[in-house]
Length: 261
Image 1 (cartoon, rainbow, N blue to C red):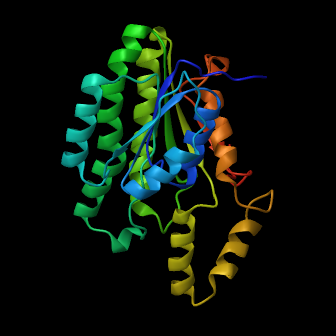
Image 2: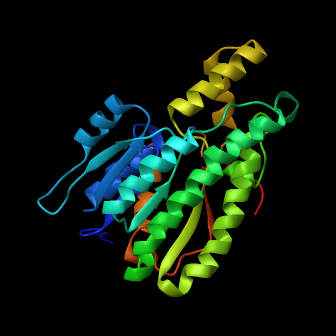
């Protein structure tokens, strides 16, 4: 099966590294023109240089801070004044780790702005072109924790669950416009985020980070954590015409980690 995204324009959040970068690389390899978004301009430049490019492609980047909602809203609004996208990959950095006893009400508001409001606002802007064109792909990077909450990620558990249910409703509302909306439930992947979480957990437990990683791998049926490149393959498929009948779903990519159906 050959996937071609030639002529399509994609906007990818969190694209300076990890999962976001892997997604951008795969979309570009399939022919899409990609706009990268993240906080670190130097990393964005590095990612930009790693994207394959042909005469029919044009890649660029936006320096944004998803944790600064007002600032982000201004930048993304300006972008959509003169640009449109066919494929939107909603992906941001995760909120600070911690359990429910470590978090206050304001922490949830901050996480809501980061994980929910930025996604909804960006999607609203992207939908204008998608609805006129009667074609679009909205793909949300979520987490397996919306099905099986992780005690040390109280903020992420709570807000991502809201995002997933919102996206399910949106899929129903825009389905007749040939726009699909899908959520990917992310398991353990070899990213900086996982390394940071493991470092904190190792410190709390008084063990080495290697021990934390080994324990994590042991809980995954395939006995390893994921390669971000594998994530990029799934997103590229969902972004293509091949996945036109897949919408309103929550698709785990976790090596079998989830125990629930």
